[in-house]
Length: 363
Image (cartoon, rainbow, N blue to C red; front, side, top):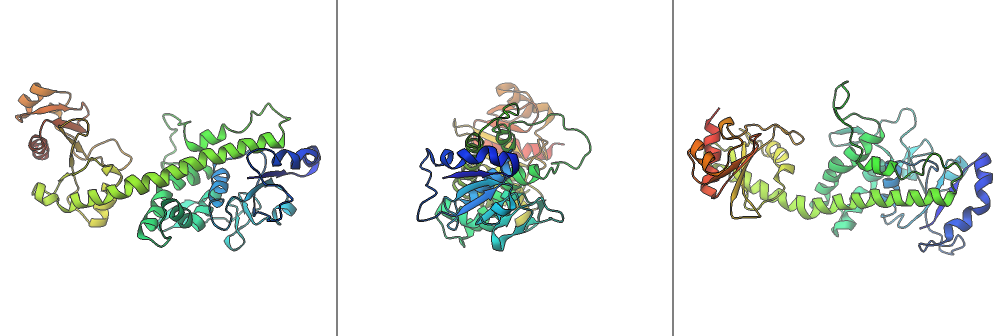
């Protein structure tokens, strides 16, 4: 991959003499004189952010722009000649592969119920996401799994980690300041890759090396998200669905489910409850502890990003272990109940089920 940074005015004069030679060195970058000229994707030079770094990474994984060269510039005359432009230029026009989101009047969203304004990465994902995912999981782009992954990756990664952050959209509808700030997010990590502000004489090659690193950091996490949801999340969904459909065979209340495998059920239960129109809602999930022959029962949270439980385990059980817990609960084989009441354990399945049933009856 080749980088070309082009600026105007004094900065252009300072950089022009060394620009070409600096960017053809190392990493197998192609020569400017190559007879098979690669596509060229533009984004702005100078300080970079997560959205254009991820956007450039994604678009270079498409068939149309595979391994395209990156041109970093704010010069309109330069940008106009490029095959695609991200996060600069003041134009959103997918027919010309122009993906900026800073211009006045821009209000593009992903759609399908998602209303967060898109960043340049969100725009690239909206138009090329299915193709990128299909290639990564080696399925046809019209496969149902690709369709489901397309929406899931947007919801759990693009919207949260990139679009909302880049557009300054608060996570909560409140004017109160957060109790703490998370500086380990993807956007924060990319931000720190910008060269120190005190280095005023940094070369274009140094700037582009940092941007390439930002692309790699953002891209690696993006691909990890796709592969996690393809290899873990998607198979787990069918396990949770089958358990929900069989809930009445576990307990007549329909508020307890048993998982045949210890899968990431929290990612699915809220969506599937809504999709399957399950009422009353599930209160407890029982599953085998992978590290032992014991069983766990966990209270379902009030929401996917909440810590409070719909129906915590009884207060009199909390913080107790083993025989003390069994004596108080009247259920043999108890091993523990967390002090907050969100999870407990028993030596047997029957014991875990008895704990869940008893908890349902207690206030």
